[in-house]
Image (cartoon, rainbow, N blue to C red; front, top):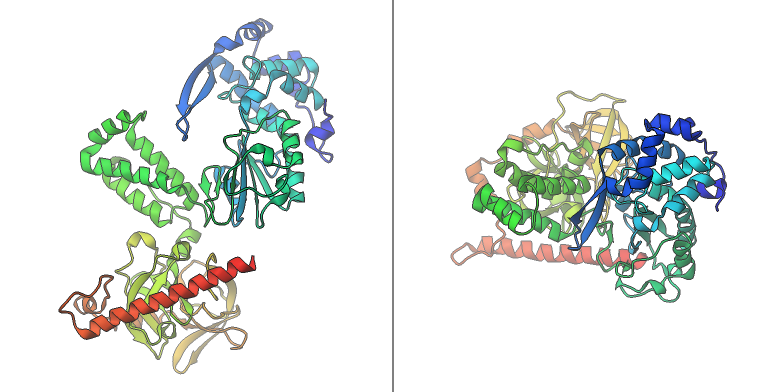
Length: 578
């Protein structure tokens, strides 16, 4: 029997809720008479009904749901147990404001992941263990027996009772403590979501294994270090031999069903399934899609099914993500009476508004501005008629954009947005009022951009409103280093007040062109008919096209080749540095 100190830590004093003082007080709080308690005591197994739900693996999960009366009683017990449980940092399952997303985020950027699954998790937690735990933290023995009896079925914790989540976390407290200590010694991050244990690290986790680190993929649990196996076994759990998995830097790394290789993502098959269902609705109609969905084993309404899956993807990837926006657009066209409303945060919209200019010699920044187009600095596209742009989340997807107008005097350039699908970006807006000295502003850009880097956000303030070579300029206090050129400077409301032009330690002063100058530059854009002759094409120039057009195409492809080669070399050097 563990002491209360061993169960819940040395620095925490556990106060037993007054509702658990004795049997009479507890029954009064629950609204249960001694006669009803006696009835539940002997016939509780009949107060559950079982049903199955399908797992992603195709197997069935058995759910034991209590009847209405027992569920009411269990819901009253939950706050009492929550008052006793001290949530540990590694625990993400059944905890408010935590989820599979926060569990996956804890391992973001880690290149080596070990996944361990506990076999028959709830079934391994017996009624005697629950009684022992409650008694160990100072609960009266009779009260412990009553609570355990009301929470368990057939001598174990049922999967489906409202009390099972918090009880399971309480039982796992000591195991979480032991595994957290092992993770620290192994220089790993440890988290647990219900029965899913995850360890991750920047280097191969050799200390988690008895000898050599196994090859990527499934591995036998007996390869794990003795200390790790013992920490699980001594706490009453067994490792599921079929679900022990190791992923290295070159393989797909999953944490509770979430892919963490580059940000948070779902398996591509998940997206394909959503698209397949939407395609079925679009081609066969709602009735045909419903029939197909039901014939494949689906239950319920097909609209609810696909809506739930899209919502989950949006929860993980963010509502500003292009994939989410594309799926929502298709869903809303098919189900006009129950549209999904996207409400991306200001931060998400800002992140999708600022992109990278991939010049063959260096990188710069550009951003989408409402009513103007894709804006950057003229020196970021120097010597080019077309330039590749990309978003860091999809660095392998390049969009070749024509330079619609270049203003060398103001050092501004406007690029064509037509090659880029609207679902890929958001647009910033121009500020309606001028900034003055001491106003707070934020500079956005990609200084020295490399693979895996996110948008750089640099707060500061306006120091001087001035002119340089006749062009209105805004000098700011923050460093505007190489690579940020062409990025926006925004005010406290997120509206664009300037376009980053020059700066850095060697410059001494940090300048951005006043965004009001974009109005004059935009007036010099060609009309739509003329623009069509400027915009490039992704296809090979067919016979009959002019030699100049063909040369432009060749130059673009050569430029892309060297840009990709530069990124590959950069990626390789980053791997070597790790």
